[in-house]
Length: 222
Ligand SMILES: [Zn+2]
Ligand SMILES: [Zn+2]
Image 1 (cartoon, rainbow, N blue to C red):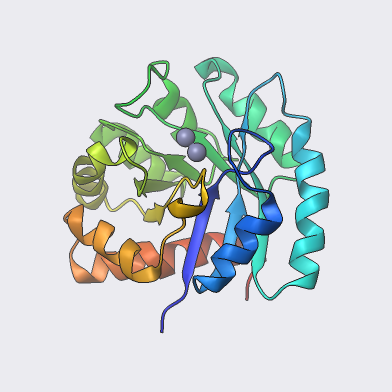
Image 2: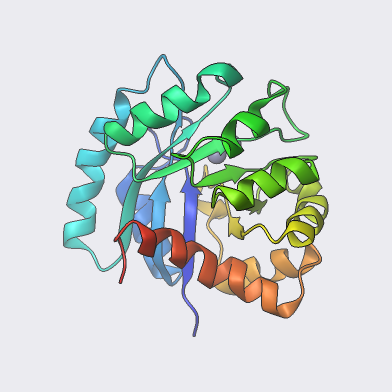
């Protein structure tokens, strides 16, 4: 059976409900092999990345699930996204997500563009009505685009899937977990990808090959 990889989850270090250890435990029970804790950060709280990293490395060492410290740059002015991504990385975030221009929130225009032009960014989350130019730049800079399992953010999944496939950008299926019930099985992730209009081959890439490639490039998995 295929295992899940979810690189976008929130703990009590931002607005999630669970401790990193409970997220890891629940994800392990739902057959995840790797998860990233990517709490919301901007300039006001980015220092918490170091603390999250300390906590998470303990879990990673002791449990049979890869738990990766990360950060989601959220509602920052577009001009400083690159600077914050670089700082989060220096503080120990191994997966950098940017909170993209979802249809659900007034995310500042230019966020998608800033994210896809930043070499430290791994995933542009819930990118809303992403343009072909933004998707092409994401592909050129090896940044994955997210198919979101989260209610609301998922409204533009079909559009994101279509634009990404047109330019050949990599997709990942992540939950943006904030609460226990947000963590999903491989089968549910498969169905969300299918619901976004991805053909079988692209579904398998989005669920396995693309997230594994991100982790392999960083030396997190072999
Ligand atoms: Zn987000
Ligand atoms: Zn998020």
